[in-house]
Length: 529
Image 1: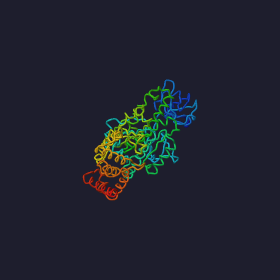
Image 2: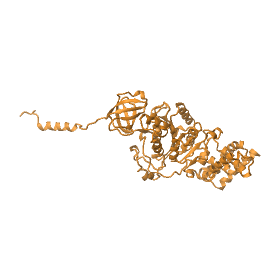
Image 3: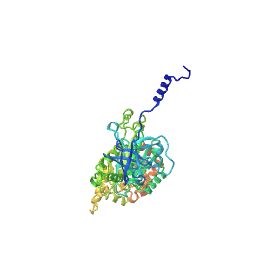
Image 4: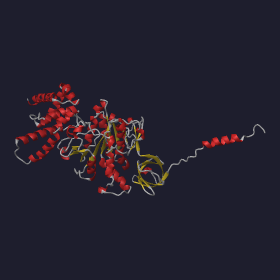
């Protein structure tokens, strides 16, 4: 037998090796076809295994979210212009639920609900965390009661309707009553925390507003140095209804990233009435049955599962790590004690808070700040109606000196409003009523605050002490503002350590009170003589 004869064993080894390398697993993409497209909704045939809220991708890169799962087709809302998708286009499943890639480098940027920058600057870099838009809220075990204040810098709110970290406080009122201004001032007021190295990261979600309005707001935040810790999520009026409906969820997902990594975040939804309208539009096009005011039946559930995500996370690390419905990207990165505070805004029509959406959101939130058109027109700004505004967290969201000074202010102001309305019809007043009205009018003047001029809490306490303890009795009503400015300037220059810094540390004893009275007396002497 010749040397070059073929050995059977070698051939069988070779064949065996080659067979082992063959990949017998079948890989297939589930692909569907567009049946029809209209008004931001595509009906797709052929995606039989698609999941609810799954992200779909068309052949030209446009994305959609599967919402209606019917027997023979899937109704999906488009996340891009309708004209880009045509009948007969192929669609493939992505296998992942709708989510947003969150990065630390988003701070200072304006993005759309998909996480793409829309401010004309370079693309967003850094490490990305894929946060789902829809996520179960933390369970009862993983929460703890609200105990730290979120200072807004507005005397009327911090004293009478305080907001705590982890709370949901509704801002409600007609259009043009200063709802957005309150939230912008709150963002600007977080600058001191940011400079002190304990930032509250702010997410402002603009829903259905004009592009020019959003641009002017971003400009204001930039002017006051607040953009360094703020992310603006914008779904303008010109954007598809699906993006306006998803925008608050994108804001909540970004807020959850900061919350679950042990930091503090504040998310502002401006406003949820427009989100409800966008959701109604999407639902009606998907032929879901309409209910009250033509909104779909699950509109309440839409807002409740959004707002429930605001929470103060348990301070115990081992408990926080076990948090329910934790995204894979955060496993091993969870830190205890983070908070997410929500300030939803609702626009009412002619002060009607008994309409469908206002009553829904009132019932979900931990209190509401009601803004009154008449007060606004009188020049009382922020135009808060003290009688029906409430914080269900209350004194837990205040520092001790504020609790001490402003304890009775809310009831005093509410009583004054009632009394004022009553005395308009009478001719003579007794001395007690006249004093109550005088004090109420002066306190009202003290609570008026110029736009974008938030006040540190220690200055708020000092000036409110003057109001609640009747130190303004001899000051004419038209001079109250002058008194406030002179008084705060004197404290800043002459009493900073023994008054302002003491209040800041949470100390308020008789010594601090007597020094405040001494400073007030000096200013009174200057003004009245």
